[in-house]
Amino acid sequence: MSKLIISTIGSHSALQILYGAKQEGFNTKVYCVKGKENLYKRYPVAQEIVTLDSYEDMLTQEPAINEIFIPHGTLIATLGKRALDIQIPVFGNKEGMHWEMVRDKNHQLLQEANIRTPKSYSSDKIDGLTIVKFPGAKGGSGYFLCSSQSEYEQQIAELLSAGSISEDDAKTAQIQEYITGVTMYPHYFHSIIHGRVEMLGIDRRYETNVDALGRLSQNNFKINPSYKVVGNQPLIARESLVPELLDFGDRLIEAAAKLFPPGLLGPFCIELAITPEEIVAFEFTSRIVAGTTLYVNGSPYSRFLFDEDMSMARRICREIKQAMGQRRLKELLT
Ligand code: AMP
Figure 1 (cartoon, rainbow, N blue to C red):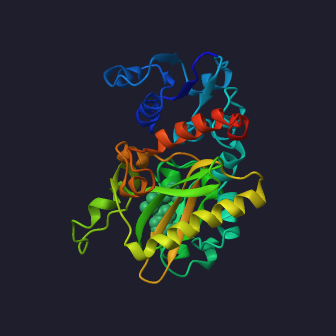
Figure 2 (tube, rainbow, N blue to C red; figure 1 turned 90 degrees about the horizontal axis):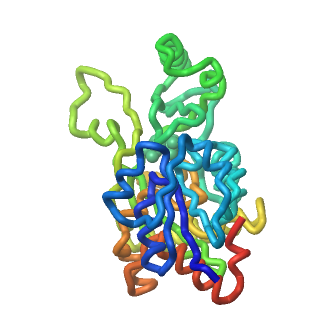
């Protein structure tokens, strides 16, 4: 049998994915949209680089023999629901990507897992600080804050006249309770082979300009925060919080198995904000998150579990390897 090929799209967490695959002894392949190849030449983690004219070309790629595709955020952000039509066998349950993408479904799953999500408002019911989100906003750019219906209407009118949003965006804007808490993104792995949920690391996002605002006094002027992710920072949770984080992961897996069996397989994440009183989830992600690249050499948590350098990508490839050994690979792919 020819060696297995692990492939992904060149962006997001591709360096980690390809490196993790190499560590586990697989061949590697990266699909790059024209102009993005250089990064994967400068860091030699891909044995094969395939150039695409556009992300749409991913949908017509025929899988090579023994090729497994590892999906990440770029697939979802660029192709939306069409990502589910990719022909290369995907690691994980594609249905999970669907539940991730549709905001109502995303919250439905969290609620089924009994994890608190921010309240949603209609514009005439705004009674406190809210964050307004538009569909398809990538990495939180274009969100705004407001505290009343009149402020909401004024900001929407400004965005419409500047051409920053369409009438459709305005109609489907989601108005959410603003959670004043610190963010925490635990990285989980649901192992079918070991029948357990592992928490392998935690990160927080570094977002511009919101993470710069604390450095200014805003007494004399107003700056609208934006939430464009530019990087990630490592984090550990205080130890007494860890059981709760583990419990969240277990509950999300149980809820997913109930709502779309067999549920979520492999990596997933819950985006949390922690206030002095409670833990609230903004959303879940059904695949590897970019913050996991912090831990190519392992995180404290993955070290406790494996006592070796276990990144999320390496963990995925280890699962694939063990599944192959037990002739159970089909259970991990859709
Ligand atoms: P999202 O697009 O939902 O992942 O949100 C992007 C970023 O916006 C998050 O990482 C948070 O920093 C911020 N954010 C999203 N929803 C809320 C909320 N309800 N309250 C406070 N901050 C939020």
